[in-house]
Each structure stands twice: as structure tokens, then as C-alpha cells.
Length: 432
Image 1 (cartoon, rainbow, N blue to C red):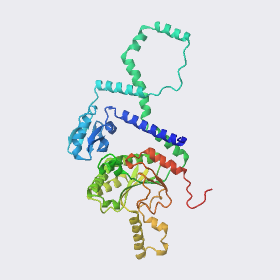
Image 2 (cartoon, rainbow, N blue to C red):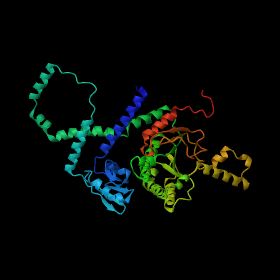
Image 3 (cartoon, one colour):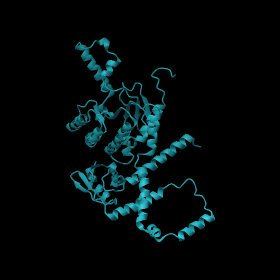
């Protein structure tokens, strides 16, 4: 027999999935204004299977009445166009070079009525029954209602039988339900409120983003598509850290050892870096996120290096969150670099070798201006640090989750922070 905590956890997982499904259903309603979620339910025939559009292409809304779709594989352009046309959304995509443009036409009155009927029917279907049964009416009460019905005035009857009034009532009811659904996942909000009450959040959070390749393999997709899918998790974590009040977020994006991977995968990763910066730079700057790139950047190509310089310059001065992307990074190389810099200073007479201590080494690290991480999260269930922040993680709390990185959401982030708040951090001392 399952224990109560296990049943509770299972129930929360089912509720979380139900809420996410509901959000996806309502987000696919076309309102006349471009939204990337409009295409969330579109499925494309790719690589011998049916997959979500967002797994094979990047969707953006650059204008209020325009969506753009950037296929990860140019060979899927025609399949993506066909999938969008067949999705019964009233959209007519058109290719323009490597980009698919999807203009949003104005909604016709007939289309509005169709969506209204569908959404009203769906809202009624999922409405929860009342927990308290209606009280039985007495015979006298029923008799009074029958007599009242026969003496209603004609205008009242005409009003109740008017189709417009029925539509208005349905629209009002649906609007109230939908207004509640506009809020982010309720379970994540509950977790957010809990972690705000239970204690301090990590000042510095580090994450090893692992599992992109296995996520793609499990769906019979090329590995690069797993990396593209992981971009959505990066956005989720950045938004979650902003909501929770985390000051510094450091993400392990690409290690020096990753240069040993196939050239095609490295090229895809570098293009992904450029794409992420092009898509997210403005939003990050608006949210007050300051981006820094940590690692040995000399091997980066011209395009990736320009993108890196751009996002550092455009987001400089952000005060809400420091976002560190570790690219071409190695912790051992970082420590060796710090030792070399200290040795050079000592040889030049600027530093007394006797003054070299832990603080001196720390000042030479990439992360010198921030506190050491309080919490390290690793996705995909692997139990290793993988040459990441070896010096800085000396006293960090470790949290490993089996969730693959593309599936990681704010909900998982808040669970990790709550677990961190339950830990007893002694730093070598004895608990009081």
C-alpha cells in the first residue's frame, strides 16, 4: 500500500499535468493577436513519427499579427507548412527563404462564433460539480415556482428566449473561468508561496543542464533537436529565478570537453547560442537580467563571438538577476588559470607569495564578483559534477532530479529550492 506522501506526490503530478493540458487547450484559441502558444498543438510528420511543431522548429511572434517559424532542419519546411494548414486554425503559412511566415488574418464573425461555441462547450465539460448537493425543494416551493412560471410577463419570456442573451451568459461564464486560467500553473504558484515563507532562497543557483540528447533519442529525433528543446527550459528557469528572488544563476551550457563531439553537433550548438541570444536579448534586458559568459572563448567562431559580445553589452547594468552562461568552460582550467595569474603577479613583484590564500585564488576565478553557489541542480539523474565549478561548489547543497533538461520547468525549480530550504547547512559547525 502506498504511503500518504507518495499518494500526495502522485496526485500533485496528475494535477500538474491536467493544468498544463488545460492551459495548452485554451492557449490554442486564436484571438486575432499573435501568440507562439497558438501553434503548440500543431503536430508535424518528421523522421517517421508525429512530433510537436516546437520540437522541430522555433516559433516567434515578431509582430502583433505575424508568427514566424524557423525549422531546425530545412528539409521539414514543406511538412511544417502542411501541418499548420491542416490544423484547422485558419492560417496560411508561406516560406520566405529559411523562414516560414504565418500572418494572422482578422477573425470573421463566423469564426468567432465557432470558437465561442467550442470554448463554452469545453468549459462546461471540465467544470467541477458542486461539492454540496442542492437542497430538496418542498412541494409548496415547487408549486410556487410553477405558478410563478405561468404568470411571467411576456417581455421576460422574450428576453430569456433571445439567442443573444444565451451567448452573453455563456461568454460571461467562460470569461470568468478563463480569467482564472490566465494565471501561471497554480501548483507552481503554491510552491512559490511556500518557498517565500519557509526561508531564504539561494543567493546563487548553479545548474548542470543535462539530458538533451537522451530526450531527443527517446523521441527518435536528432540530438540537435534535443538542444533546441532545452531552450524552453532555460526561459522557464530564468523566469522562475526572477519570481523566487534568486540573485545569481549560473548555467553549464557547453564544456571544453564538448569540443570533442561530432562537428555537426558542435555547429548546431553554436547556431543555437546565436539563436538564443537573438531571440532573448531584448526580453532579458527588459527584465533586468545581466548576462555574462564564463569560459575560454577563443575557440568560438566569429558569429558566436559577435553574439556573445552583443548580449553582454546590451544587458550590462541589469539588477534583477545575474545570468552566467558557462561556454567552453572547464573548472580545472579555471583553477589553473587563477594559479597562473597569481604566479605572474608574484613574479612581477606585485604580489607577495606569502599572501596567496583561498581569498586570493577566489579573486582570480571567473565568478569573483559573486558569492559561491548555495545550491547545485543536476538534471537527468546523473550523479557527478562533471568538472563544473569545482572550487566554488565546496559547500553547495546538491540536488539531482531524474527530469531531463527539456522537461525541466519552474515547478521543478521551486521543488528544488524547497528541498534546499529543508537542509541544515552547518559549514563544519554543530547544529544548535
